[in-house]
Image (cartoon, rainbow, N blue to C red; front, side, top):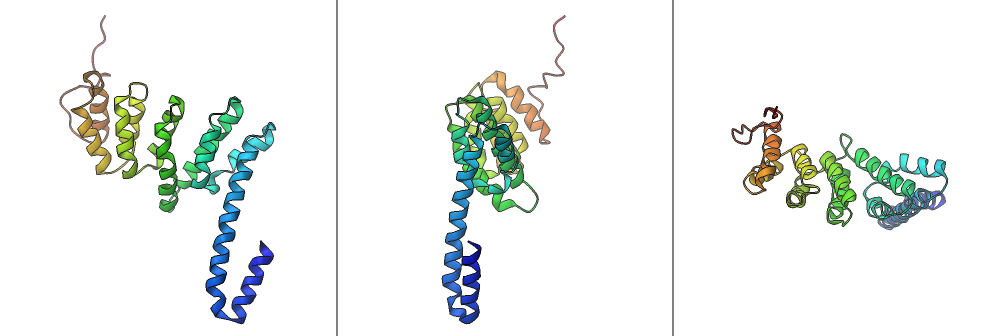
Length: 212
């Protein structure tokens, strides 16, 4: 790959008209390298060697959004350590994308995470909700709000909406206060209070005296 890039630079130096062809070739090389990086990551994550697997998930962050789907598939692995390593790798990607100045990366990772909310595996849905609570934006709000009707993960969804900034998530919480089952409205009200909204109904359950 390095020799190819050197050759392209020489071509451009000789004739600037070669710049477009060189740019196209560079993009193709980058795409091929990205695919190789994901393949190598998955191979290492599936390794039975703890050191290889550990190094792989710890350094997954920069590989980015393109690895999320493949890693999510590995989260189904019957080997607990392999599945856990895949989960840890996605978390590394999420936190790397969430760094300051990486908005485009965060949105790309968000787009790859959203489909995981429809997983039949409850643990994956819950994990994804917390990942989106860190980097999610307006695009995540509606898919997350739909989960407020599912008892197993509704409080995780509520917490995700509470943590995602902006008017869209706030509006989703306001809407949910009037639509979720009565017993869950206390949780929604608490989330709204955390967002600075004054709610007089549904007092915090922490303040309700417990029966003697």
